[in-house]
Image (cartoon, rainbow, N blue to C red; front, side):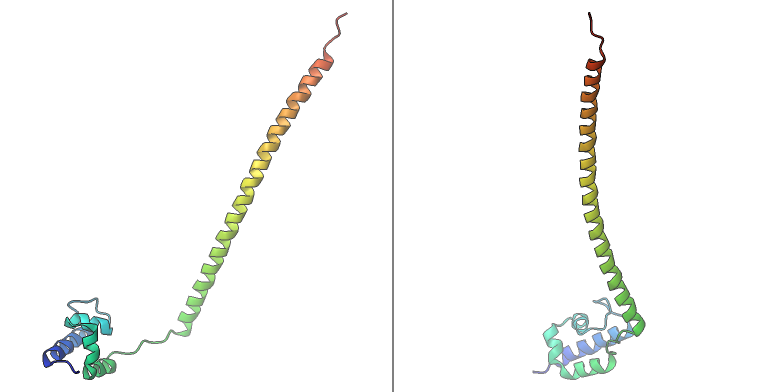
Length: 132
C-alpha cells in the first residue's frame, strides 16, 4: 500500500533537508531512520514509500569500506588492547605474589626476633658469676 501524497511530500521535504545538511528534528545522519524522524512519520511508513526509498538510495552514498590504513589502525588498536589486558592480568598476579611474599617475610622477621630474644636470655643466664 503506497503512502498518501501528503506523506510523500513530507518525506521528500525531509530528504531535501537531510541531503542539504539542514535537519530540523534529527542529528543529520543520512539514515532511513532519520528520514522517518525528520518527516515525522513511522519507520514502516518510509518502507511503504518505495519510489521515495529508491530516490533515497540513489542520492545517499553507500557506506565506504575502510581503507587499508584504517584496517591496520583498527587491528593495531585491537592488538594493543589485548596486550594491555594481558599486562593488567599479569600485574594482578604479580601483586598477589608480592603480597604473599611480604607476609612470609614479616612472619620470618617476627620469628627471628623471638629467637634472638630467647637466645639473649640464655646467654645472660649462662654468663652470670656463680656465688660461692
